[in-house]
Image (cartoon, rainbow, N blue to C red; front, side):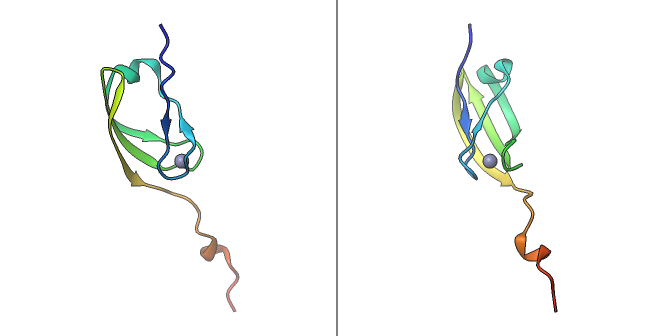
Length: 68
Ligand SMILES: [Zn+2]
């Protein structure tokens, strides 16, 4: 039996796939592969009960600008 449930990253909207054994019962951080955001999720009985945004580590474009 497969579970095709996917989460959508609340930072970039990219779908985040979880391991199948995670779908049924899981509480903890999940990393988005697209934007490296860390999401805190809670799964119960294969359904998403809770999702929150923890952190994101994306490069800041302002830091790479040359300074005069
Ligand atoms: Zn993302």
